Amino acid sequence: MISDIGRLLGPARVLEDEPARLSSARDSWPQALGWTQEELRGRMPAAVLKPRDDGGVSAVLAWAAAEGFSVVPRGAGSGVLGAAVPQGPKTVVLDLSGLTERFEIDARPGRPAVVCGAGMLGSDLEARLQGRGWSLMHFPQSMEDSSAGGWIATDSFGQFSTRYGGVKDQALWVKAALPDGGWRTEEAAPHLGAEGTLGVITEVALRVRQAARSRKFHAFRFKTLGSALDFAAGTMARPVAPSVLRLYCPTDAFFNGLRRGRGTGTASSTWMEAAQSLMLRRTRLLYALSPLVGRHWIAIVIYEEEPGFEGNAPARTAAGASIGEGPALRWWERRYHLDRERLERVFQRGCFADTLDLWAPWAKLAELHRAVLSALRPHAFAFSHLSHFDHRGACLYVTLAGSGAQDHAEAWSSAMDAAVRTGGSVNHHHGVGLAKLPWLQWARDADWRASWRAEKTRRDPKGMLNPGKLCQ
Ligand SMILES: Cc1cc2nc3c(=O)[nH]c(=O)nc-3n(C[C@H](O)[C@H](O)[C@H](O)COP(=O)(O)OP(=O)(O)OC[C@H]3O[C@@H](n4cnc5c(N)ncnc54)[C@H](O)[C@@H]3O)c2cc1C
Image 1: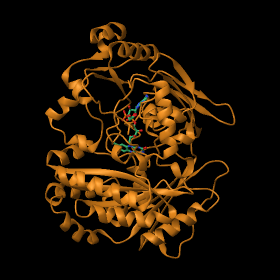
Image 2 (image 1 turned 180 degrees about the vertical axis):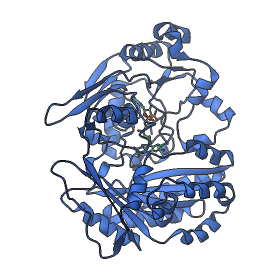
Image 3 (image 1 turned 180 degrees about the horizontal axis):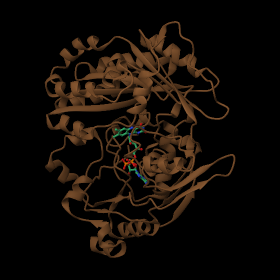
């Protein structure tokens, strides 16, 4: 009975009212933004449980095991693939946003770190670190809306990954509760990308660095993706990688306001809003008009200057031209920008907007771009940028928009299939969730899947944690 857990956690920490249950019936998966109230009611958990400490998490897991409830861990609900969407009626959502008490900096030389509660939001964590002269290395665009535990569970990447890697490179250990009532303080590895199926993370230790002293901003333009990629490869070959390296196609550069340089105006947003409902039903016209917004790829390069790393600069380029620092400053000012309400309005008008995070090695990036963008063309208006470069390859990030649920579904599956044919991965940093489950084997490699299955059998043989995810 839910009232039993109410007695243990305290009534204010057990939400059974419909608005709370409805808001936990979905995360930030764009497809779920189009669900009707009826569809949402069909997904609603029996209750939302909000423990404030490890004792509360233990109590929930013991109670759920005894009562036969499934448990869906939830951080801040910013996942975009449905990984936190409850499956089945006998499910509770374990909302971990109250786990914010722990905050401790270990400033010992060599490997400074912060230990924090898993529910702490990225922006709160960074603000507390900055107040003491330290900084994270992890800055997802969802910095203000995602939690430290969620970063681990999705194997997230931040905007500075070119220099600092993903959260997998920064996580030292996690503390996690297991369904059998046990606790483990262990390496983060089993939990990276496990989407809450192997344990409930309550604490996270992340490497930190001294806050940057200054930053250098650069922008360049290129006539082709090929020449922009050559420039990116040259920049990556220099002794110190930039913190940020991003290549925007002409349309993505336009919608991000990169062609106009510094400033916080949102003319492109206004343009987009006005055009949305009409234009998203006429994607062929949008493609015909798109050359008007520009023909150049734009590269953004940002170096952070720490002691010993001063004076780095991007590769020299004969094929491109420097366009000053304005576009990079503009990107910096809007790097966490998201107008969620506007996105919801898109779906209310029967249209859709979604994103895809794909990956390919250097040699296949141009082919991946060509294949995915042409697969999308019959179903959606699409544009892209490349980011998260490392010595192996990069992420192709595609924004797609159009109208109608059928075109949305077909756009999604055509793009995923095109990525599979090209030989890339259908996942870079968003994870798998429900949206990519049919493509699981192209999102997580065979070794990863085998190790996940062995851990699942050991830790959660009855499948109590987040059932229906990563299970194919
Ligand atoms: C506008 C926008 C921009 C984004 N930008 C980025 C980006 O730059 N980089 C990036 O990597 N992602 C990005 N994302 C996706 C999302 O923010 C990340 O996946 C993030 O890591 C999710 O964290 P969360 O706390 O919101 O997790 P949730 O969405 O609540 O959960 C995600 C998954 O993690 C599990 N989980 C959450 N917390 C725990 C825990 N404590 N213990 C066990 N399991 C847990 C859930 O069960 C679920 O499976 C973006 C999303 C949006 C909406």
